[in-house]
Length: 255
Image (cartoon, rainbow, N blue to C red):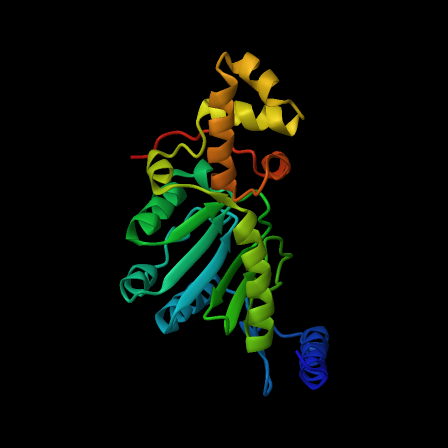
């Protein structure tokens, strides 16, 4: 990002802030357009859904998303445009918060998306819902909103979308890599894997873990290596640090 581009975007963002302060009507949208940035505030759920679907329909190569699992009971679990986008060969990468598994309809939708070709991972380090299309435009959904405030922000900016996508990539790399088999079973981690992660996070050595589980040290080391691959951890120490953030318990089976 060069200085001129950064200055231009800063001025346009300032214009949006000024517009928001002076806007006293209850209009459905608030739009700021510029050469390098288009920003629109979304106030209604129908507008949000339509915008989501429009972005998926226009996707040319990739869609990346954070899904924190928070949405109204009546909201659609899977975008109606996603299956067609997946059939077109669009790459979907989605990082889910574990609370998605607390609602059966969201779990079913996630499993359907994985079956259709979505690449999914799990992380407890998700604080919002974000959808990024082709590193060109994105939606950030507000999780806490006061009466009359906007529901989401829709931005078109190659520079900002690329910045957001790079931030997504860092979370993606550290998220729990769950095999399709485990997604299908609804069991992200086996009981002994959870125990191993808890013991590693507590600083226990392999020998202590083996004694606690009643297995050989070689078995513990083999399981730790498998967990390192699942978490994308390069070392035992990193696995212990990641497990402290992303410790997930087994979830109920969803047919």
